[in-house]
Image (tube, rainbow, N blue to C red; front, side, top):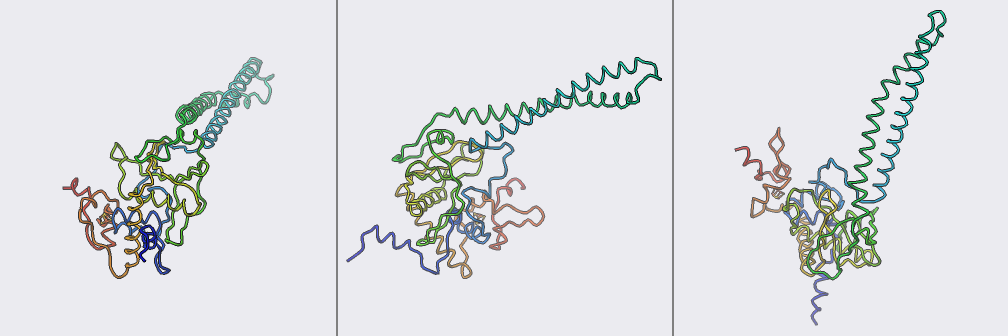
Length: 341
Ligand code: SF4
C-alpha cells in the first residue's frame, strides 16, 4: 500500500545519520546561490538571525526593548544632573572666591592672608569651569531629550496591533505596536535543533504571546524600497524558523516577521504551503551540496548578474581577488567593474 502524500513528504525530509547538519543561515545562503552556501558552510559562522554579513554598523543606535531606552534615559539624566551640579558648584565657588580675593586684595600687602594667591588661582579655575560645565549640561540635556523624543515617545505611543494569524499575504508591522499589543520579545540562549532533519537555527528574536511563537529575522539595512524586497532565500529561512519553533517548542508559528535593518518597521511572512515547499526543497538541495563537497563543487549561477551585487564578489583592493573567486578559482563579475571601466 502506498504512503499518503504527507507521509511521503515527511520521509524525504528525514536526514540520514551521516548527513550534515544544516544551519538556517546556510540554507538561506544556499537558496540564494549554492556557492554562497558553500562559503557560508566553510566559514562556520553560526546563525544569528541577522544578515550580519551585510549589516555594517548604524551610526544611530536602534533600540528594541523599552528597558534599554529607559536605561539610556537614566544614564543621560544622571549625566545632565552631574553637569548641572558642576555648573552650579563652579558658579558658587567662583563667586565666593571672587569676593574673598577682592576683600583680601583690598587690604595692604602686609595684611594680606598667606592663602590669597591660592584663593585667586582657585577662583580663576572655577571661572574656567563655568563655560565647560555649561556646555556639558547643554550637551547631556540635549542627548537626553533626543532619546526621549526619538526613541521613548514613539515606543510608548505606538498603537498596539497584532497581525491576523490566519492572514495569507504579508502585512506591514511595527515593532513597538507588537510589544504594546502584549508580545514578549525573547532572545534564545541556544540555537533550536531538530535532529530528525538535522536542522539548526536561531532567530534574531522570538515574539511570544500565549501559544504563539513568532520568529523574527533582521534583514540588512538597504536604502529605498528595493531594500524591502523579499527573495526566495527569505521565504525559505522564515519557514525554517517557523518549523523549528513548531517542532522544538510545540508552539504555533503561523507567520514570521522580517524587520528592515536599523528600523522598527517590518513585514510578516505567512507560513503557508508554498513557503514551506520552498524551505523543504532548499533543505534537500543544501544537504546534497554539502554532502558532495570535496568531490564536486556547485557550478556558477546561470545568471551572472546575480554575482554583481553579491558581497562574495567584492574584490580586495590590493590583490583584486574576491572570496568567491579565490574559493572557486574564477573571477565573478562585480558591480564595481562597470564603474572602473
Ligand atoms: S559571487 Fe556569484 S557565484 Fe559567487 S557566491 Fe556570489 S552569486 Fe554565487
